Image 1 (cartoon, helix red, strand yellow):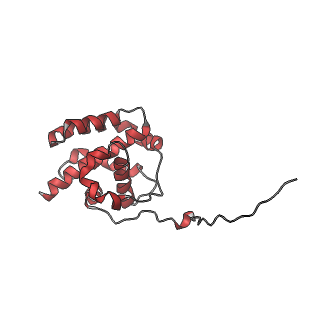
Image 2 (cartoon, one colour):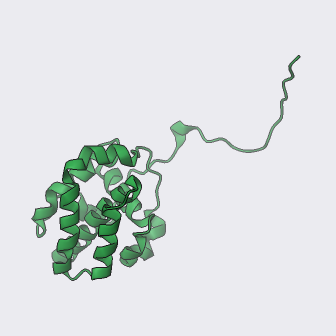
Image 3 (cartoon, helix red, strand yellow):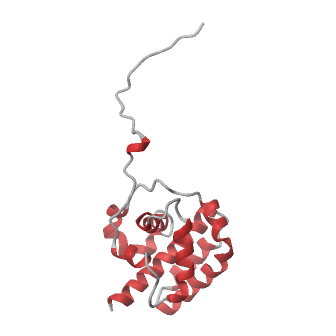
Length: 167
């Protein structure tokens, strides 16, 4: 014998089709990240490949925001004190997220170049402690941290590029 219980919890369910997925607007650093670097051109290949595989859409506002979120929402977040005033407005729902192992498979051939890029940032007056933190994330055993390290490297390069463009 089976029973069926009918009850109402009072909760509102969210229809997945009605979710408010991020589509913009973009903040200044995202605008810089969305186009080829003019001053730090040696990092354009890393930037472009990561943007192309970070999410399951070609919408640049979603790609750049996911890079920022993966950087800020990990142990690497404190590197980006400069973005702290914007942190609340940067939080967004990214509906087209991809898993870190899938992203990593798409850019595995570039992994050594991210470590070199992080170490090269010392020449741009990035403190050694921040570079060490980036490199430890890039060399982590955890794929989530490795992708966060790649995102943080591109975000840091984008911030440096923004400073060059703003004089």
